[in-house]
Image (cartoon, rainbow, N blue to C red; front, side, top):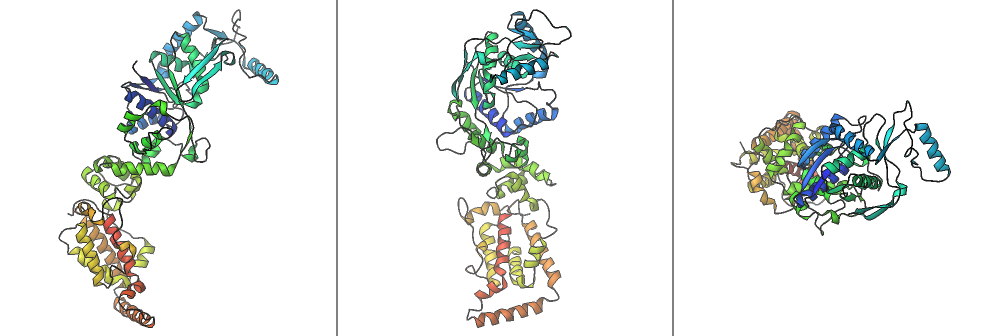
Amino acid sequence: MTVRTRFAPSPTGMLHIGGVRTALFCWLYARRHGGTFILRIEDTDRERSTPEAVQAILDGMKWLGLEHDEGPFYQTQRMDRYKEVIGQFLRDGKAYHCYCSKEELDEMRAGQMARKEKPRYDGRCRHRAGPVPGVNPVVRFRNPEEGQVVVNDVVHGPITFDSAELDDLIIARSDGTPTYNFCVVVDDYDMQVTHVIRGDDHINNTPRQIQMLRALGVEPPLYAHVPMILGPDGAKLSKRHGAVSVLQYRDDGFLPEGLLNYLGRLGWSYGDQEIFSLEEMTQLFDIHDVNKSASALNVDKMLWTNQQHMLRSTPEHLAKYLKPQLEALGLVADDMAKVAAVAKAQQERAKTLKEMAANSVFFFRDVTSYDEKAAAKNLNAETAPIVLAVQDKLAALPEWRAPDIHTAIMAGAAEAGVGATTASPATRPRPRTTGSATDRTADMTRLWRRKRMRRLNAGVRRWRAATTATLPVLLIQQGQKTREAAHAAGQPRGRERMHQLGLAQILGQFRQDIEQKACCDAT
């Protein structure tokens, strides 16, 4: 048997992560078994279905890379086929016209509830002799009155329904338009679907659909109803939990493989493995391994999973998704080699592509302003020795490489009286996930030297403009105060002086700026 699965969203809203997980499971199962994945748009609800929602579904599936083998099929384009089957059911006595008015139905259900019975259509029109003048009837499926319907659900196990509890479902409205449950049956029949993988909110629809499939003379497909995704608080997932369009996750900077990995692990597992490529999930996924318990959305875990995929991606792959994030910030990102270089430099420093783009603005746009509070604190006469010393050392480097930059900064610090032992923790080599501080040589060879020096020079110019007139006096006054304070405290006059001046902090800030902003050729 050739496996044929289908993903059949209704375009009455945006494609959200619950639907994406269903699509993923359908896609994975078909791919693992060499089968066919069908995309079907169930747009019979004409009042609520919108072209925008349809396009969002198509765009979301394309971004995720869940390509379909057949489709997309639209139910609104298959009306003639549905009417054909309805006509056949009427001729075969498997359906009948119902002339009951709304008032009559309301009275019937009120009486049933008063008798503490389950409200259901009682079949009173099953044996009606003729039409009712002036009434446009609906068409109801003649459900078997005896026996049971057993749903052999892959996830939940066998689920039994008594036929007597299933009323005669409306399959065509009074205006002749077919209903959702009927269209689904005809579509699954015509498209030869072998496995129906969908949310467990459809379980109650399943026995009626099975009865109609049998009326068509076929055995039903295998059903697998996957549990719903809950919010972090255990409540039904809503917009406040993250039940937004899947395209919002794209705009928020998630990699498609990162999002799919996270959703695949919601309700499915393979040992203790957390990170899967799409290829790995295709090889390992089995619908029989899906848990029947609901899973809760965990945004922190989702971000972590995305970060792991960013760390494992090539710069070229990241660049493809980073480019639109940069363009959303008004930046020109046409040079993909440059975008890839930025991605490589920032790869370990962001959880999302949106965060990466925000941290990389200066690679594409010169700095024209400073945070006023930071400038007031750091760009002053007191920081002059360290800023000027580091500027000179960096400007003299023939080529920017990690070891050389580190040496230059430390030399500038020493010249200004700041030693490695007195510098703030931010000035020291920071630990990385892998490797050592000197492992960044490759990144630093591509450091955008001109922009970094331009940024430093701009800061110096700002400092000079603010302090030129008073610099000599301030340095003398501050130096005298420092010496007096150190002497009174019995402290050495060299090393402790830097704590008084706070120059270690400006060194640390600058070194972080240099090391974190690696990019592009030094031209």
